[in-house]
Image 1 (cartoon, rainbow, N blue to C red):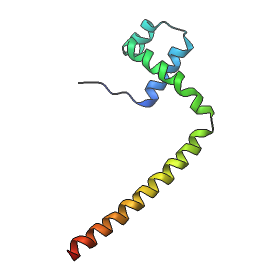
Image 2: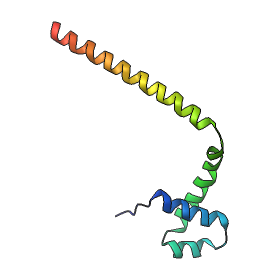
Image 3: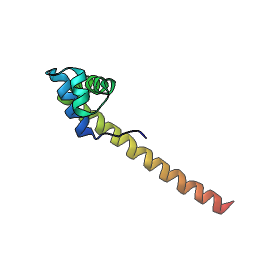
Image 4: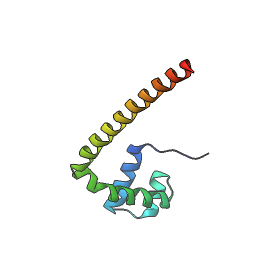
Length: 89
C-alpha cells in the first residue's frame, strides 16, 4: 500500500531540502522518505514559489470562477429545456 503524505509534511521536507543543511540521504533517513520523493517535492516547491509572490493567481482564479458559474448556468438551462421537451413529446 502506498503512503500518502500531508501537504504540511511535504512542504516541511521540501524546505529542509532547499536549505541544503543536510544531504539527501540524511533527510531521507530522518523523514523516512525516499530520496527521489524528496527531490521531487523540492523541485515542485521551487517551481511553485513564483506563484506565491505574484498577484495573477487571484485574477486567474476569479476568471475561472466566473467561467464555472456561467457553465453551471448553461447546464441548468439545458436541463430545464431537455425536461420540457421530454414532457411535450
